[in-house]
Length: 256
Image 1 (cartoon, rainbow, N blue to C red):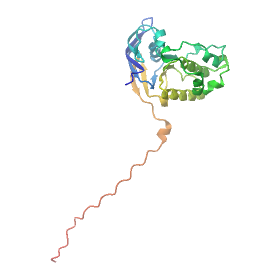
Image 2: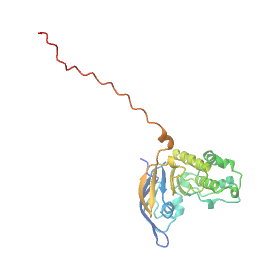
Image 3: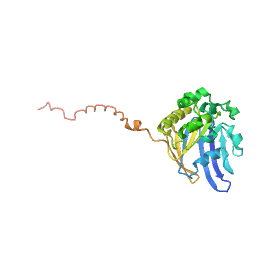
Image 4: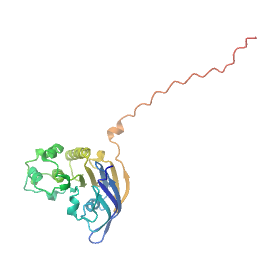
């Protein structure tokens, strides 16, 4: 049986100022699952993602990434376990084109044998092929987010942590991201998304977990789509005819 991609038990985290920000997080994510963390600003959703990468202060508990305990590892070693965070637009070089950014040497995870090919990126996100020679400085914020996600996939990750990806994206970019996440899911990628709303990928999300004050409150599956809700139910099977009841009338008296 496959081990979980992420197995988090009693995760507590503190900022460097000793603020207790995560309080006993328990979460298991299997390979190929898409999970959403929903919460208001300050709820701990972004901190949860950053803590998985060792980017907060002190951590206690257990965080197993692809079967390897990482709670005491530095961030550089955790990244080599095949887990990445995005979209981080600060990793993009403004003076380079989209394609040059994607080809720029990166620290690929040796354990996974490198990242997605350039051809694979363009098949997954065709808009980036159209923009491949455009300088990053000329891209809109949603287009930069798309490029930043693609750059993470070039690193060789199989666990993708996406933070607030629905903020300020256009309907076109939302459609591209939803399709990309759906495709990555079928290819076995594990995706955890943190946001204040379900977002464009709600229909391919396996579970949503609500987080508040650094604690997971409850979980639920996404609602069915409008198409599913508007599909009329199948008619019930035809009722079988009622069997004829035997007559209870007395037999005629032949003696009369």
